[in-house]
Amino acid sequence: MKSNKFWVIVLGGLLVLSVVSAFLLARVPAGYAHIYKDGELIDTVNLFLVSEPYTILIEGTGNIIEADRGRIRMLEANCPDESCVRLGWVSGGVVPIVCLPNRVIITLSGNNNEHDIDAVVG
Image 1 (cartoon, rainbow, N blue to C red):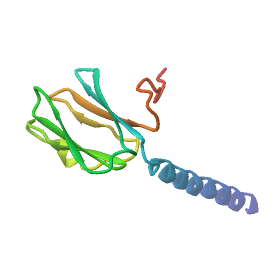
Image 2 (image 1 turned 120 degrees about the horizontal axis):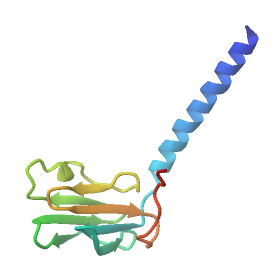
Image 3 (image 1 turned 90 degrees about the vertical axis):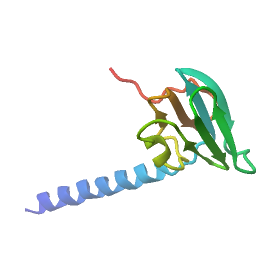
Image 4 (image 1 turned 30 degrees about the vertical axis):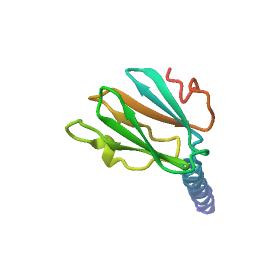
């Protein structure tokens, strides 16, 4: 019986540790936002150097992006559901901002290398 309690405590501790680690990693701010249109990189924003909020108009889409110090969001979009706008401010590299109808994607990373490998699927 003691053996089972030991393993429950160990596994519970590992679970708590993994949840705390995932939370802390998700809170790491991204340094750069890479803006793509039709799969082509059109702009890179250094989010650490933004001193005042400013907007970026993506030509031909009606999408307006707002960049602020350490964060970025889709301010306006002319797509039907506007899920990219409802996502709000993004400051970590976990969740990209995607506007499928206009084929605009904003990814976040810790450095200025737009060719970072996020995952390998095999």
